[in-house]
Image (cartoon, rainbow, N blue to C red; front, side, top):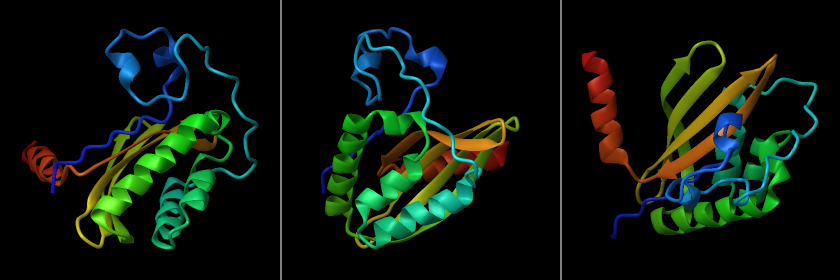
Amino acid sequence: MPYLLIVLFLCTLPALAEEKSGAEKKRYSFSKEGESTPPSSPQSTAPMDPSAALSRFFEALKADQLETAYSDLVKNTIIAARPENVEQLKEKTRAAIDNFGPVKGYEIVETLEIGKSLYRHTCISLNEDLPLRWRFYFYRSGNQWKIVDLRVDDGIVELFEEIARNRKK
């Protein structure tokens, strides 16, 4: 099976929303070239729990409810203000599931905290044929956790190498 690599870049931090170099503009982003970042969507009154959000996301994927998975995950975020890119993300996810088989479950394999306001959860989806590596980046603004980035790929070998390096430290 050819090596499939999908990198999905959902949302840039404000510092990254400025004009980018030509190479950086090829990344999947939720703003068009030269477009300023739109104002944030109204925030929900109930704080998002990142672990619960991941559980809902993968349960929806497991039930083959791609629309529900993403609409719930990006609800009340700036990402939702860019529906054309959310659609592109759904298409890429559908292609990955078609190549690796249906999602049967998931595992959180690593959680990395940067201070008290940034989390990265690395998960593997337990697909029928092969697993996929998912990276979810959450930012806490006040008492709200918001997803600011999502990446998915088939870099399982790299995941082993990265975790082995981190254990040696």
